[in-house]
Amino acid sequence: MEKKKIALIAHDNKKQEIVEWACHNKQVLSEYSLCGTGHTAKLVEEATGLPVKAYLSGPLGGDQQIGAKVAEGEIDAVVFFWDPLQMQPHDPDVKALLRIAVVYDIPIATNKATADCIIK
Image (cartoon, rainbow, N blue to C red; front, side, top):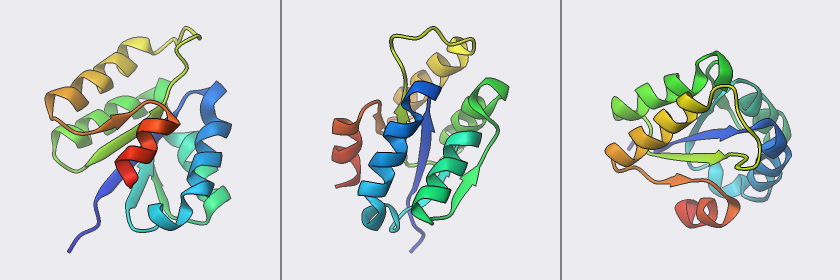
């Protein structure tokens, strides 16, 4: 049976938080196939030692790449630690990713509490 795939994304002010979350949940995350946007994928992979397929960084199209994979049925859940207090230059891409996750009825966690619910 193929592993379910989780996409990991975090805005700059939330990257340390997602790394800490991934380290804390390393054992559970090892049961999934992981991917993520550029720098987030690299940081999580370095911190946990788990393989994380990297797409482009969010502002350079990574959010859209992951959204396309959601639409193609290749991603089963998204963990996106976004910063609601910081304006993002690629905000339309972020909203499009959130929208596509809802359209395709896949779980999308935007904080540690919901991320924990998704992987447990």
